[in-house]
Length: 305
Image (cartoon, rainbow, N blue to C red):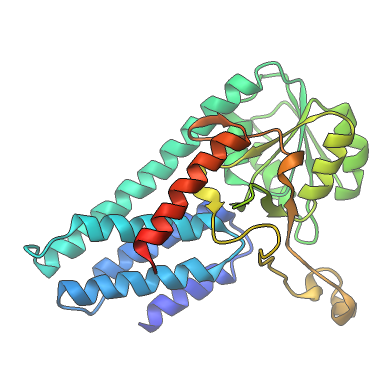
């Protein structure tokens, strides 16, 4: 199964795509397992699906959607097949399931855009940072026409520039700032909108480094701090005390002084700094998101990977 390991390693090394996009890649890997795997009986195929799901769940611990969409694939695959299925039919059903989940992901984005449209209908200016495909969709389709958008570039790889380029034809008033200017820009905005790589068990949020600082400034100046996060971004295996935050090479910070540079990619924003979540279920406060966390706890227990 070297090809599976290579696919998963590619996800581990991916610096371009966010958690939601990598979750789609995880679903496609599981679909490929159904199409290309060696097992010739249902038991062997199910075992391979579970093993691949476990590897995917561990691949990027800071990115909950990879784990959750993989868990859902495995759960529904196990429920879908039965002893009367041929191995060929079971593999076909796995591919069909993957297509259904990919379509569901797109539906989630549409639902989040609609939820955001209602919340931000009177917004005149907002701040965001880094790159999130969900935030991009919200800003492209859910903003009032005259809303001003300010993007912090998100060092060291400056993913915010990608968001700026992608929105340049759709947002009339678009500005770019360094991360260090957020303390100046946020007080002049109506709200802060960020994506999320994970919502932890205690409802704190893991996102690109700089998010916590933006939340602190928003709190100090009484600005709403909104997180675009569907309920598949909940990680019930971790809280803010035991969360694993990915670190990358110091070379990205300063190549000539690599060994002296820290490069932690994500930080944790406490629940009390978050106004609410823009999800596929609408706008959720902490209590609403906690109900969905309980659902993931049950799934983890039932699947017992």
